[in-house]
Length: 638
Ligand code: B12
Image (cartoon, rainbow, N blue to C red; front, side, top):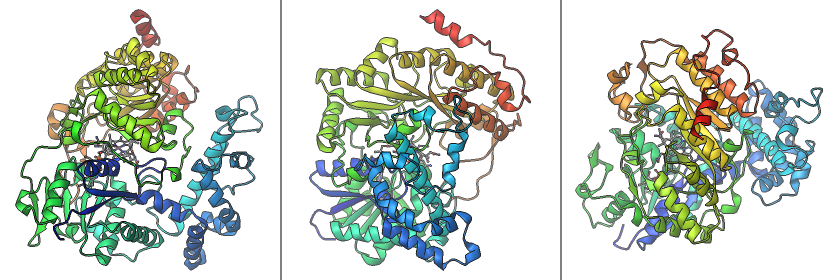
């Protein structure tokens, strides 16, 4: 590469989300432009889906189907093939509808005679209208008589899910909308499975993706391509993208970074990764990229890189000269320039108001601060930079960014993507938004801190807060203490009630299977959750099974939590989750099924007055939590 400044193309590989861009390329592009560099971005996740789910894409899928032996076609694939004309004639208008470009089509979709209905539509049968158990409209409880747009959005999402299943059965068994070929990367100690998959003949998905990547390179003529992998489910595609670019344009430098790398590739020693990438960087990308760009221009030696893996004489070398990161106040404003904002798909998958926020709507994603101000939770990756390095900016800077983003995108909705947005910063943000009379909507993740008083919750609601999520984890004071969560169940009740009273939707992250958690703890935790729903404190939740990672306090000091860790095989590629043995011997898999079923019903207002034992088939002890515990706690605090 010569001495002129590089043109940088940042790429999001499939899959992330389809309703709005994942923000890493927006951050990197905004930062590079703030330094006067030529930077552009593409979202290949969206591009791939739009290409495959088009009339010509479906034709191509059909060619693959016809190449399969007749007995190799699943019932779903055969049904798609038989109904092909209807699929091909409905796909373009349905996508335009999901993109918000053709809202009147809702009426047609809602009739249920427009879209072909495959197995995914069977999910509608579980909804029985209590007023009309004989049949009638199974979606009336969710959308009523006038909610045509949402009803149609849900039906169109089921239709698209059917098509994704067809693609999975006929073309690529690893295909999913939110995670693609995830198992090839997630906690994979060896590169071998990924190497084998990359050596295989490209299938239709691979070919489409690679053609789109080359098209982006032809359009933007970059010297450097930054490939961002936030999750394991984006890794395989990232390598396919790099593979295509390297084969056609060996002179282009390709760099890999992002949340997956920051978490799982910290001990990377696999030289074959560098057949695809020239460098792999850790943690916040701004400083390492500046160093690499200088290096590529011959202005900096390889010995002076920042947090970068490279290959030298066939060996992987990690270099970090230790230059300080760019302060959060100086990273610039993310830009969405270049991304096709009117082409994202607003999907309505689960009929729950909080789940909806994740898949529906073009939210601008912004961080209130870098890192987590609490950084103590023992299940969390607190040893990693994206948690441990807390660095905030002033409310003025934040609201300058908000204003600039609204000006650029025309959208006023914000998702604050912090692990836990600090109450102080949110208060200052609310004051500044109010001062500038800026009308936005926002939501994000917080800790249920006692500093979220009813007054502050109301102030946040007035500033545009519509929803918050936070960890209640295992609702047990003993386990919350062991986790160093810094909250108690009663405190969570008071805080969530204050948010709910202010009209803010509350979603609780719930956990099961934490070290030393007994069956009794699990039953009691569910009783607390039941009471929180009953008392109108929370409206939504999700139960995650606790997973031990090597970067968390549990993974680092297992003896403090009464568990022993499994031995990991030698790692040259990814390292994250680690198995552990909990001597309590509880079968959390079985309990998890009951917890998820109970929660699903609570979210729909069902079963709230039933004994929690009923969800477990009666095979568990009765709860030790008094039935009015939360109601009484709320009454004494007001
Ligand atoms: C908000 C969030 C979510 C949200 C929104 C997700 C979305 N699609 O937008 C929700 C709750 C939906 C979510 C879901 C999931 N998430 Co999440 N999520 C986050 C979180 C907290 C912030 C992400 C973010 O927007 N950051 C802001 C951007 C700007 O930061 P960034 O992407 O890291 O980019 C910076 C650097 O990484 C670097 N960089 C990025 N790309 C590149 C590229 C190059 C070349 C270079 C040099 C640098 C570079 O520079 C950027 C600027 O500094 C992170 C943790 C964290 N604090 O980062 C976890 C995180 C990314 N999620 C994670 C996971 C696992 C998931 C799920 C798979 C969970 C699950 N089991 O379902 C799903 C996947 C959903 C999906 N397919 O979209 C993991 C990934 C770790 C891993 N093992 O790979 C993380 C790291 C958290 C964790 N430790 O568990 N998530």
